[in-house]
Image 1 (cartoon, one colour):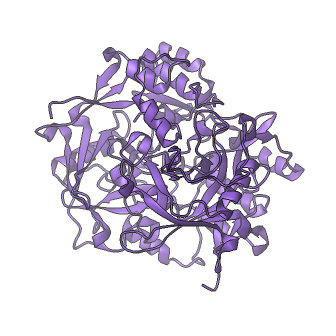
Image 2 (tube, helix red, strand yellow; image 1 turned 90 degrees about the vertical axis):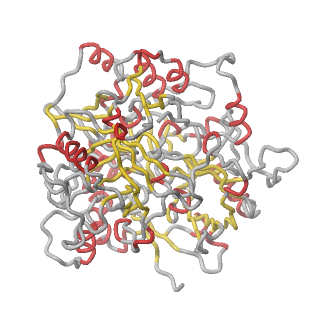
Image 3 (cartoon, rainbow over the protein chains, first blue to last red; image 1 turned 45 degrees about the horizontal axis):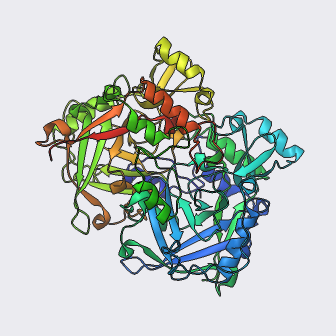
Length: 318
Length: 318
């Protein structure tokens, strides 16, 4: 999730990559340096029960393709997340496929025959039907410490799509005086639906593979974010049918399985930098005011999507 | 360039695609309907001398891969655009390659040996050396009509990265009291450079294939935008080296040629909806307040990247 926002020529990139972290610094710390220096106490492990592990069929060269998704925490989208837990427990997605890839928009997976009454795979019992009201939650309280931090960051209120934004437990959200909701950013995972807002169960999912489609906020449920392997979705061939659906079954990418990490014998582990930590506050300040050598004109602001908390692997034995 | 921001299930998508445009409408016109209804007088053809046509080597299935780039108009980045005109006149890029693809960031092309003093392809004579001051231009005047239109669109000033934004001749730009500059959006084409701001000639170019990297505004020169074929760059395999550079020559995608459309025997032709037109004003209003059936909670705003003018093909005999 860390970003490398330089556009360097190849030899310079190699030289920089080879520069030891202890080299004399002639600038305030970069975002990457702040993340690297954050003490262990500021990192929080993501529960294995909150991680979806999607294994796609290997690529043409036989390489495995694994996509890891963190589910959004309560109170957001809790009905849909509950449905997704039922679907994954039933191993419902196994053998289905990625059916749609639309450039600068989404990669979408689920049952390609989902609307065929004969061929559709039956859904597990007990899925909840959500309503339009469930796309947002009552505005959340924030701690006095958070409020003080936000006061120094005027850019947080300069969002074109909502009166105000805030990071909640590492997640970019927007809000008005009454309601709050997670926003659509690159890598966000949401629930495909039909025209009526109560028609998405969570069986049909998509990941954003382009510029943040913020017009979808409060219109579709954000239920997670890809924290590893997004390129296995974003670099897929674009579908040539309407809305990027593939026109032939052969073009679809098979899903071998989707599991909770907690079901796996050797689960990948991840941790996230606490958005209540001092390092996170420094990180946002640095992202908004890049002052390392390449950035000759700091922006003075960041958008809410660039305010997501960094995620990194926890080393495991495998 | 038109967007299809729905996440429909397959059968519904097919049904909607089959709906005749004359079907009874139960909502205000959608962005797509406004664009389709715009009279011919509101469309402006893009000069063939302002179009770069990049032909990549055919894909694994033998299909041609053509990327069309519109050069940014004066007064923006005019020194770099002048250099690019010299480079394309010299057929300088022919036989070079796409050397870097970094997920949610850029696809970059040029001379893979550009920094090897022996192997580097010599640059044409007479390229200009630009400075940090050239990344912006003095703030542009706008017509009284434009000012009146902007007054009703409060979201235009809610940009997290700059005091104000404005669309100029169809191009998304930002500005402060003194200066104005084109911004980085999905599909924007810019000039790769080394650490010093005067080191980019225009020979090393990139296209944005992810969320708008607005921190690059005023830091790197935006010289164009991809108006057709972006997926030939955005769906390429990501490089596994530092910053997404490919680690082996075999992974690079060869560039057969880059030409001005005006050099081609049968050039593609494009036109853009005038950003001074009534339809364009209606389009922005509709994009900010989606009220067709799927959009149950209109955002009330758009970001500057969603304010780019639509581009479409002009039918040709071929």
